[in-house]
Image 1: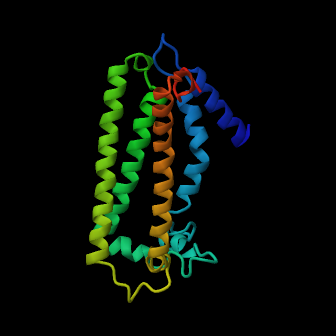
Image 2: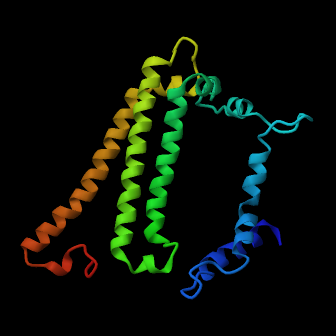
Length: 213
């Protein structure tokens, strides 16, 4: 069948398999899901070392990533993650927080149970619950990253790697992010200004809403 066929079958089962009668996926969806994710699992298993020298270590993979603008790339990152608890905790909190926010979104956009699609109170509670958890985890990630930078980071041993280059260009990066945030802020604020103006002029049909433009 091939990877494309397996992925297509798994997607069709995921879309059409859930019914109100069984409240779960039909038989075979579990197997199709595992088949769909099998290519990624095969790639991950190649990272493990074996007695026959097959596979790659995480250190080798990190140090192999070098681009034209990244200097030494991720060289030294493995040592940072294995010697600094705060760096490792920061990375784990960031990944878990991001995953929790994705779960919060999926809880209402793709309800795992049929009744969730019509039980708006439960839906809203689950979304708020997971968004708060994800937000706290992201804040924790930034906090421990800052602790790592103050306590554990040694710039004398981390020359020309990716983290060093980011730190040396932090002024340009922060200024560009500042303009991006300003643009996004005015973009959404402009919608409010437009709606308030149209409402004041007695033109509700020209407002941005579910029943207008």
